Length: 149
Image 1: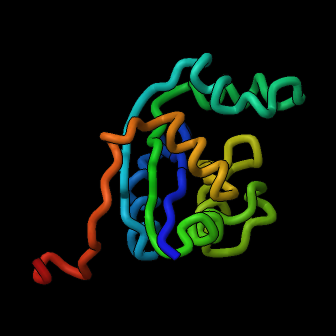
Image 2 (image 1 turned 180 degrees about the vertical axis):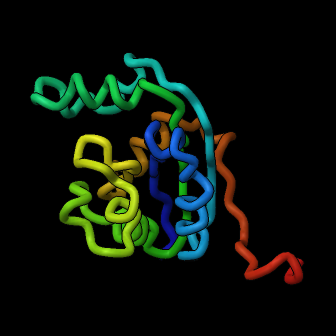
């Protein structure tokens, strides 16, 4: 089933020049980039995004980290996109992430694990609409090469 999901390439991954590598992994898995924005989110914008975690011990550190530099927010589209992106990203704790996953390869710790992704259809819809307006999202047929054009 074709669906959309949301992902963030976090500030430490942007600063470490991992954007291209991570996007390549998503595209190689036949996920289409339906929307992308590089931005430096304010602490308030980040706090609103992570509002469900407010009051938890890690909330302040998470907000500081996520507003510490540019992030790349993504809307990704494809068959089983939510499950596929979560599988590519790996477990939230890089120490528990499977070899070959993005977090296992690049995540230094649970608190700075280089990527975020939606965990359900509902959260994907909410997260996409938080960062993107409808006119910033696109659908298209992915080709296997430019020769297919």
